[in-house]
Length: 238
Image 1: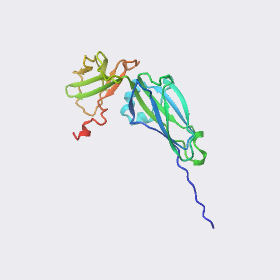
Image 2: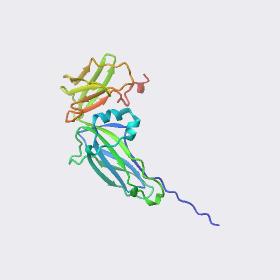
Image 3: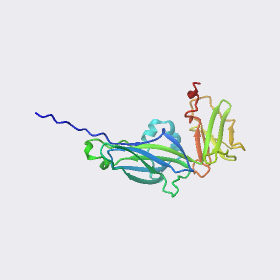
């Protein structure tokens, strides 16, 4: 009898490219998301405003983040990208997150979710289910905040992402996930030091917010002392 070769097509994918759960984005530039797709004809995108309370809970709670979904009242926009590429080929698509003519998102915290409708999976792949949804938190700001925590307090340094200049007079609130913040403003060097804010637990993240965290405007920014990729003590074997 003649042997027949069974052809098994590749599983469908729609992978949202990120650099972790949270990424900061420059509000002076276009904000673009990228997805790698294979054997799907459409990827749906939903962009939401993310309340500060949700951000703080999702930051380091895997269970909360795993179950998290955007709320309809916080929806900014939903749209779809057609991704009809040849069978089994993998292609990266980029999509602009803002509908504004300049492609820029306003400062704030956003939640982005991607999904693939069941009817968009290529029929040739058989019984594969649609890929798992992608999800990501975006912090969009005109300013960069550098946060350092020590035994004597917390230091925050603010600079402009467009010019690189320091930002004096910027309202700052230093806080933990819970509890009351320590408020102040940056000095002429763009520095705010919360001398009365200290924690002996080196593993507890400290957050610094610029501007009004609940209703973000042009002065909004957020950072934590844990954001130190490439410059942390571990990178220098310390």
